[in-house]
Image (cartoon, rainbow, N blue to C red; front, side, top):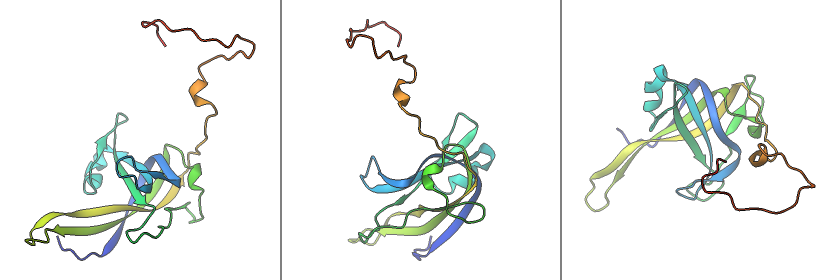
Length: 173
């Protein structure tokens, strides 16, 4: 692998998006970095296409998935541009409107890297970094937040007494 440090873009067409966090950068639970992220899914027959990018997971729905992200802060400390999201005609799409199951084409930026030990010059790690770049929505499944989603299974009576009782340990909830 040559360490040219030159970026190249690839497009993965006809994917399904899940868990998009594109409207506002979110904190990475492991590194603490702010980032935009999305999971892309394709049928299992396209597994090799995603394996070349990194770690993939088999899903219960007969697909394989790959999580991709873009950091909100560049290495030099300056803010990065958000992930561009457009429709088929390349008109901007509100990234907060994208729901699970949205069909899209995804552009990723790839950059080869080689890390060498400064003491002996030996290669300690090499690979290809993958960064989410742009998304073209081809079939939008609109995201709609559910109000009080944690309490939808309860019938609430405002006139009921405001007390609580301990639940039995074997109670089904």
